[in-house]
Image (cartoon, rainbow, N blue to C red; front, side):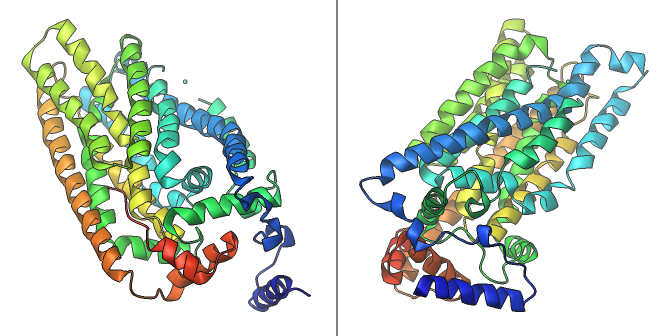
Length: 425
């Protein structure tokens, strides 16, 4: 019996003794599945793997996002068709309807994201620096395009179908070969120099506790809340006249994310779209010219290009352990959507000047918080440099050991590569 198979047998026996059911087809790929890691075949194999994942996963996720946001924008579209008149709703009552809509999904953000299904899929398709931002932007492109249209029940069908189409982890994706599963895991390990998996004891609730203790998570959450408050114009945008601005926003979103991937820069790519919204608010508050305000609508719509990178930056800033990353994304999403609740006041129609002033203040505050995050990450990168002389311990050491096993490296070689990891800011 080989050492590898012996260790797996011991692992199975240990897990059985702890009451864990072991499924042989879900065991991590072994060393014999490393055929695609050879230097002469890996580049082509990696391109084929990413293409295969893209073709299967990206269209599904895009459709989910489109249907989700079409459903969410249906109320505002119905308002244009006479909803408030037909139901005899006052402006306050209409705002309450929108608030109830948002309040129903805000509390569910954290527990639903702790499973990190979409986050896991994105990270398994992509590498943080080279691919993640652009693919996230493509997905959010579905969000932006959906704002140009106004729809329901088909969303339920698509959601159920996605359960069977979308995988969780490389080691239980049945439509990839064992060698491809191994390659997918190696790609993830190379991101942060650690295996992208939780060590023993790192449950979802442990990840939640770790995320709550990390000051970056709280700052990200408040920044996202302020950002969505500043982008609250979305709740009162009309539908048909603004299709060109949303198409423009989708293009800007993709180009901005592509640039973020190429450069590895996060702060500026995240914030500059907000600054365009600030200009748009100033225009809107200064003139009633139809042409000027229509131009401002393009700047407003493009502001969502920054929002599209929020989850990406959180994942870059808190990459490991996965349980902590999952909880962090959930917290940032959940608290961030409270900003949508604050932004639901329509009592200042038709000029919305107070709303614009609030938006200016909110996006300015968001920029300050984003700069604070940047400074924290710069400081943590310097701390990583100082810590490179120390040997890792505990769960962090386990993930580096697993990365070494997956890539066929010694622990010392994997540790040396880990020492080159830096946060993106």
